Image 1 (cartoon, one colour):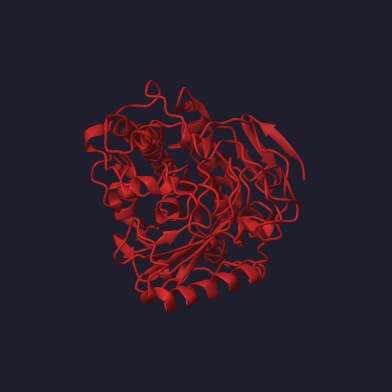
Image 2 (image 1 turned 90 degrees about the vertical axis):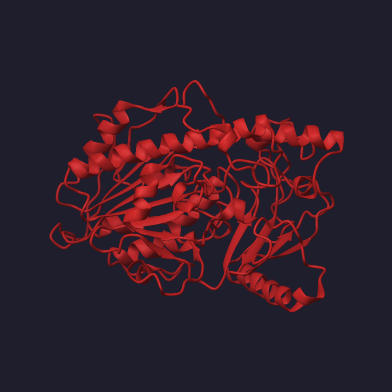
Length: 470
């Protein structure tokens, strides 16, 4: 397979086993992926943030209310989406771990069906993943703004697809930290932000939240312009458009945790004249482990037997159909080492913490944020509420169980309440079976040293350290 650079677009030469005529009626697939966006969009109930383009997508398609990620970390989450396999099954469970040369992603299968495939901006799956695309589109940011060259190369990819269906994956860097107010339009007001109960409601935290909102709004504007280009090139009608995030908002007790604030994702599907506009799926759960099988199913490709995901294509056309009964998610090394696993139903969640003797390992980009410093300041002063102090708890419970019908922020662990015993035992059984079926490693087998201090958050080491144990 030969890769060349052609006028700003990296092209991978390939020969499809399908003819162009066989692929002529297949839809284009355009995927927009946010980087560290939680549920802060107008269409998901946050009326304090400006996201007109994503809200418009939701009004034109199907919005999933209960969609969840396989990890609260970028690269493990993205590789799970792309492969239909859990990160620990393909060796990508630790942040920045690339896929190997034996693991196939969505574009590998679509190319064999005649698709013209491309990736743009953030990937986070490594060189062996990049090789599976026809094009790695030259794109980037200039002082926080998506460059004009990026839009030109995006449009060129669409035009170069010709009569072939295309698959294009666009991974934004927004709203990942760090934030630069000089490079991002300030369109959201700090006093209007929504402060969750586990953060400090004061000006620095609200300014931090407004910066996060502003980057989401900037991404929203980028998406709006890309949709206009799609329309201008006559490709809108037969394009399946998808929007989602790779993990929760970049704030303490969100990103890097298995609480819903870390693993719940916005998920919107739009397909003109195929998906009924304005639909909402709220009947059962959706896991992003099912994204790859769903897209292969849409393209008429048999789902490989080694994928753990199952497609939900039928739900796209009939949103009253039921989703999953439960989902699973995992957290591993991300600046600090962790071994956390969870199983979630619509009403209950069980979280297993292997390193319960240690404080939670919060990622460095969060422990150097204004919101973190405000929490630490109040902690020293002795003024944290119960909710605000949970992220610093040590020792942690090995088992956390939450009643999600009464406790949406997961602040009250009910593992020691008798009325939840039977539910907890059933969840524990499901979690153990999942770990066995997916070949999850024991907690002690791949333990790594920490990069930043769990108590202060200070980033002592540079980069990931060697294994303690193999």
